[in-house]
Length: 160
Image 1 (cartoon, helix red, strand yellow):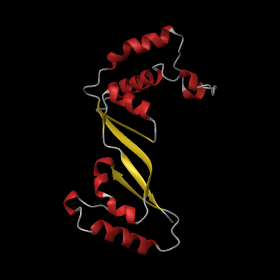
Image 2 (spheres, one colour):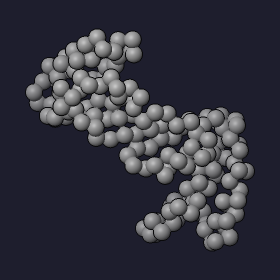
Image 3 (cartoon, rainbow, N blue to C red):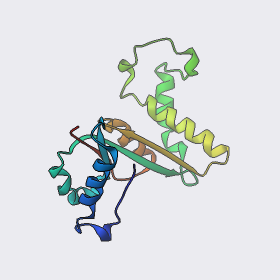
Image 4 (cartoon, one colour):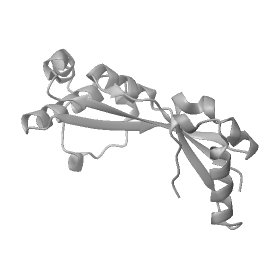
């Protein structure tokens, strides 16, 4: 069940009525009750405290205009990786589980730049991405690439 309020309706008690209605409609056997709210709207969620909702997860989305994306900004990173012996191979050829040792070296940057370059060459004009939880390094990378990262979405779970 999905419900939502427009900002003009905040504070009129409709949000509480919607939650009460959802609980009544779903019945006592429901396993879990969740809601997602943009982080910039959290100030309007005091009513959820009454129902015992607690934050469980955050996620985010981002958009990039490929018409203005310039992959050449990342050539130095790609060159540095190439000189250090990093090879980019198809996923099917990947056999190692030793991935942590490669973090923070620019590999994800070059992979994303290559993917975005191919998409741009093929005529794509927009790219979307997202992530969740505590993956702030990927969020920062997407911002570095030029993605416009939107507000986080906060998932709140109620007791059941």
